[in-house]
Length: 409
Length: 180
Image 1 (tube, rainbow over the protein chains, first blue to last red):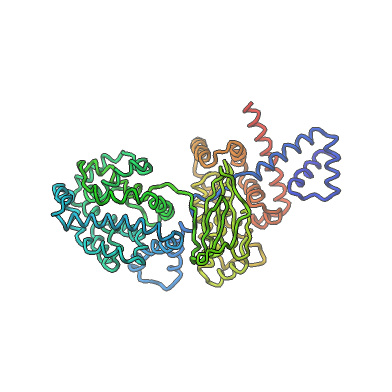
Image 2: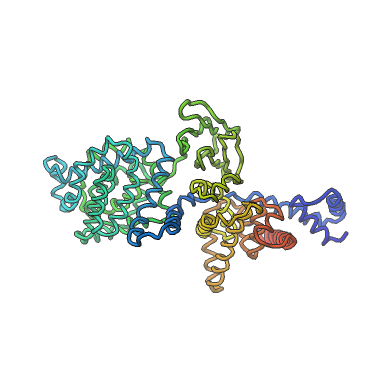
């Protein structure tokens, strides 16, 4: 047998494609021919390395990112809609969809944390406009910027407290926040449209009002905005990630939003693929910090720095401190229909019936202390995926609750 | 990989089923795109495009083919198109610059040194050889499944795969010599 023929056998052997006779012939040749034996060893080594290539996974859900486009496709496929209406509808609808997904994925506790923070901000802004007699507002009124904000935030005064009692609707606040953000950022004229929309549901106020004054300020107070932009270079993200620095930026937030106007970063395109996901992650982070920060909204409202300084933190603040970009390991994840809770207990993935607390499935893998077990997502009501990072290797598993099986992806 | 019932439901117009199906395959789609295109950003773009195409063309899938090979056919086609376009639009000098920049991004994505050499070597393979290797090792497809996915004759698949492995092997050997 010549070496060329053996090369093919070796290659096929790597794919498990040899029958017994072929295998024997190959092994016999390898014993006699050291060059082929060496080549075989190298090919096997290569094949092992190829098998061990990192099983990369997308940095965020691709399906979530294309959901808005899918909706558009559905619309186009449907009845020929009125063009003008279609344009308006597509701008808002994708976010609506995203929110439903958030609700499905996040425990109420987490969402309510953000809502609570939003309400406090809303109440604060309301305070600027409506209660000049309070001591903070007295000082604030000296701040020229605050006057601009007061005008557009006055309606929030009535609505913000009310939203605290409306839990169902409150869940939507993070979304509405985003809608309002985009709408308000587009044009100042949109502000009135935004107000109309807000009037229908209370919960839109905290988010909506944060942006509205800013958008208004954008045109009225270009000077301030420019000054703020010049100071843009401050690294807001870093500050936000650091809990203690964060307290400072949070303090400034409401006032700086009011006083500095819009910044380019705030104009987040509706269909930006990363947007939904980033906020998802950040919502979780917010929950952890809420307790520490909440009182600050109430107490330290006074922006002592001149507007440009406040703007430095404030412009970024909207994305960073409020939704700080660190993804914590999710230790619990409820299925979309709310029937099951997945949790990592004692470094094992455990799925329990959400109502009875009964253990429905316990993973056979118990991970090491050094491994990072991360609940990833419920694919549907009965299928959970999770990742395990051990050093540089990352593995993904899928649990089928119905069949009580677990497979490595 | 994907339950036939789910596919049928998706084909009969059940939108939730279709979305859930897309969620099940997105990682596989992305993985192929990542290793054919060699960087995260292009892979995200290509994978999203593939998912959109699957969403709109789900009814053109016929059960006589395996669903996973149908999916991989879509994503490899998109990747190979993209790959050609990038290649066609950059001149040689520019290409060198782009290549260096891309390598940096890759290094951030996968920090493993062992994987780095082999991924650089994969990047040097011609597009179809690369696709064959990716389907064989990242999707763990058989020769036949690769042939179905790429619309190539079985013998061509084998010869691409064998040649690719030989080329990778000699590239790795070069790297090792260079490293000593």
